[in-house]
Image (cartoon, rainbow, N blue to C red; front, side):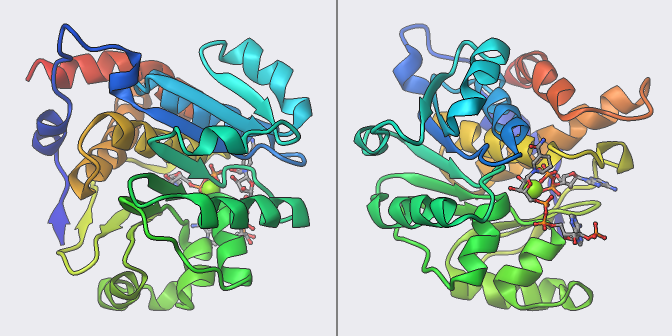
Length: 275
Ligand SMILES: NC(=O)C1=CN([C@@H]2O[C@H](COP(=O)(O)OP(=O)(O)OC[C@H]3O[C@@H](n4cnc5c(N)ncnc54)[C@H](OP(=O)(O)O)[C@@H]3O)[C@@H](O)[C@H]2O)[C@@H](O)CC1
Ligand SMILES: Nc1ncnc2c1ncn2[C@@H]1O[C@H](COP(=O)(O)OP(=O)(O)O)[C@@H](O)[C@H]1O
Ligand SMILES: [Mg+2]
């Protein structure tokens, strides 16, 4: 399997043009943080803001909004009772799933996104949205790019492959059918692209085994796809950077928190932009 290395990241992250503005760097909507999972969408949104997204809009439960605004005043926050539907068409990227939960309300919103997203938009499906997708056998829409970010159990639900049977060959067959990019998250996560060679990271470690780590990755993948080329190489760069930052922090820390990875993003991105 091809290894994703830092040279690839340096190709993706380039210096910003002088005459750019926030609209240049992607309008991204993140949907989740329902029920008792409010933190998940804050972590995903933090990765989007610190990863460089120009305009971040969050659609969440009303009780998440004060905490979100306090932690992340850069993000706009809408309650799922507001008419957020009016904003969907203006987005470059939609991330749905971190802390979405599996309620009927969550299912209704997921279906609404899957039917209203257009072929010139990018979709990232994570967390509970993957569980709902599998449980209700929902069809993936036609988009510019669709990325699924399952952990092994979520991938079992979506693919029908038991964890023990999640071999590169078996995974690739399902990815070719899904016509979506898939990150199978685990130690040394794997990146599958339809009808293309599989890739993996060899950075990252068990200091990342904390709730919210995957939510952070989903936000970062969305952020990169909104500001760099919307392709598998950009997804690979986000996947690599998420764990490479963890490795560096783990030289001094026993555990690495998801929010600490987001806080380091501007520094690491500057390093790669100069290479
Ligand atoms: N701060 C917050 O708000 C947070 C909110 N979160 C949000 O919670 C929602 C539910 O997501 P979820 O991942 O927690 O639950 P679910 O989909 O049921 O999967 C867990 C089941 O799968 C199994 N399992 C097997 N292999 C596995 C593997 N490699 N990695 C992980 N699990 C593995 C595992 O096995 P077990 O641990 O029992 O051995 C268990 O039976 C989702 O929307 C997410 O965004 C979280 O991000 C946390 C922080
Ligand atoms: N032992 C490990 N080695 C490397 N990465 C790990 C390890 N354990 C967890 N991770 C990383 O943590 C993240 C877990 O994702 P996920 O279970 O979706 O988290 P959450 O939903 O709690 O945010 C993935 O990016 C995964 O690769
Ligand atoms: Mg997750």
